[in-house]
Image (tube, rainbow, N blue to C red; front, side, top):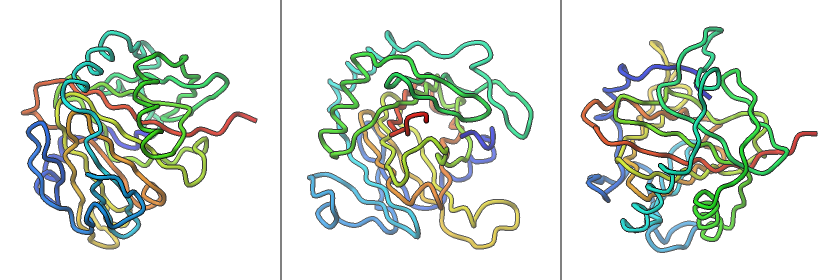
Amino acid sequence: MDRFLKGEEQEQTRRKGATLGEDEGCPRKRPRGETPGNATRLAVPNWRHIRAEGLDCDYMVLFGKAEADEIFQQLEEKVEYFAGALARVQVFGKWHNVPRKQATYGDAGLTYTFSGLTLSPKPWIPVLERVRDRVSGLTGQTFNFVLVNRYKDGRDHIGEHRDDERELAPRSPIASVSFGACRDFCFRHKDSRGKSPRRRLEVVSLQLAHGSLLMMNHPTNAHWYHSLPVRKRVLAPRINLTFRKILPKK
């Protein structure tokens, strides 16, 4: 997952592209390619649809503030994060400390490999089942695994990457649920990366609110990298849950 541990240099993406998010202090502009809430297959009130070339995402605030506050507190109390060697990541053959805390939970018998680590998830805990079941009930999608990322403040981050691991069920969506501080979330097309990009496509920047759900649908991860850049002015913690469907090990 972590192709890069960059963050500081992505600070400039904050002002590029369109932005999304209006709850919990997140100002909102309609991203280019976003269609009105009643225009696509997810005919649920308050969905916002983000579309670009090969980009297909749906966003909404799923939990009200009181419930989101309750879930955030339970996550703070119950989630057990990796330590030691499991809190390091391999990038271009070198090992680095992960600039955030991570944990995995899911069904028995699954394994998930990313950043040089192969992990077996811990059993589901009630607070994660609660969020998973809410997402599944709304979207009709099923999930058997969740990656938990905790960012202590705006200095914790994740670099540009694609969730394209072989264990993921083909064409399955990834459901990203956020609690805590509002943070920028940036998409960059694979052809627009590097010092001499093949093409120059606009960065799509979203602001993910407390209690929000972002559905990253196929083929988004085939064409777009995403990141959570450094934001030094953010002082509060954020917890993100990315629910996935993993293929059982053969």
